[in-house]
Length: 205
Image (cartoon, rainbow, N blue to C red; front, side):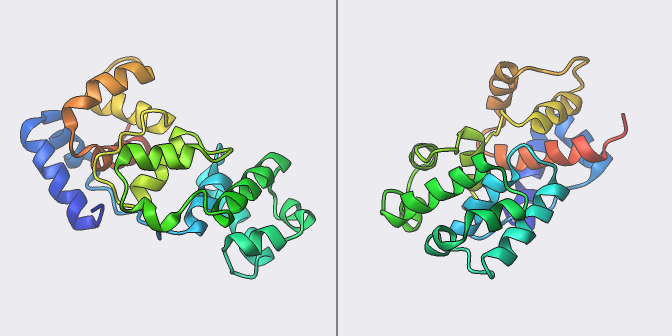
């Protein structure tokens, strides 16, 4: 599980075998847990945060929270007027994605209760079947809401850049290289991804 203790333990294991990890930890320290609840709200917030900075996403999410009166459920979202969601800062596209999520959950086509019992591949397939949810969204949910230990979000730009810097590569790696080179860090790639994000934002250039 991706608790602070679990993250430290996983990264210490990697550092014993990989000098790059040991050096990165010395430079920036350990990343902190970013766990969220396994819930409809967490899925909805992933949609809100797509292609936005953390600060902007948090501002819009707070406004959506107010529009929904704090009741992050599929039924409440469907009853929330689109004008209110637009006023909160959501694009029409993201409103459509949220409504698609709510409809899918409401019809029972996506069972949140069963996700925790599914394999990583099954969870990814279940989430990406919802309109507006791609592999990146599934990876974020598996890491932060389900606490899966070996998720490697190679499609995330900050992970790719952070991984390249951490490894000491002179050029930014493409996703294919990140997937291939990251394979040796299994089964602790979720902790590595957190370190990559931390390294991306904290390590001196």
